[in-house]
Length: 99
Image (cartoon, rainbow, N blue to C red; front, side, top):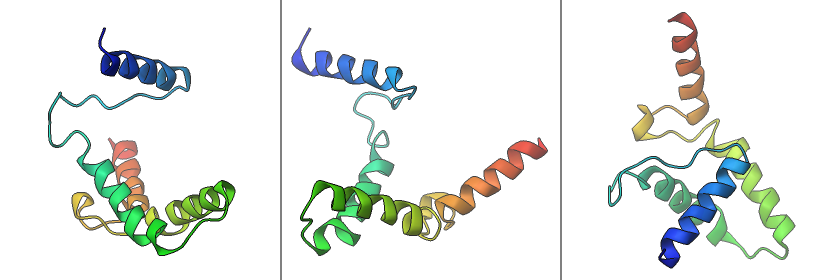
């Protein structure tokens, strides 16, 4: 087993232990990580690069605040029809319930 495969197996196993499901995209698919890369790029520009973070706790709190108070409820995304993630989830939940 090559190191990358072993690391991937360990990572996948840790995800399952935490009750999470990893990405199911095809190998070498440009779309597999595109949304997450966009998310992390936005966070880098809009939050992380704007100041120094004296402690890991300060950074963790700032990331939580950025995601929960700005990114999910307000930031619009072209991939979601220019809705915020919260608006998209609300719309999707209403559609799923009606079906």
